[in-house]
Length: 167
Image (tube, rainbow, N blue to C red; front, side, top):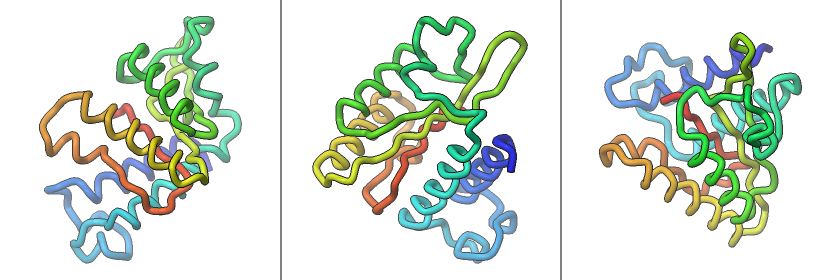
């Protein structure tokens, strides 16, 4: 399965939970019946998407290394490199066990990325801190309360957090 397919599948999953989206696009399950995905269902879908992204070993890299100034040809699809680098550092400090730049692709002489995957720790307190750092980042990012709410996540027993900078 290609990284592009996985990424497109993830975007299709995300489209199902956005207000005003046509519920007929969804496959079987609650979204197909017109109900939005619950936080638990969304966390499960994110974990599946993260696993698929991480299985594509040719299109992932450790996030700190990928964001390093030593890689001048690494560019973000969207987002501020300094802010995203700080987020990665803060997530590691909070307890994230590993963070990857995922679905990296070549664009001319550059390598481009819009998605990062953070693996959550198993320790309850560290997990809570990682969620807090993640949610605070998006709250500070600005936008309407509705836009920000779309990015906030809560504990659902998930293994990963997807950091999508393509919106």
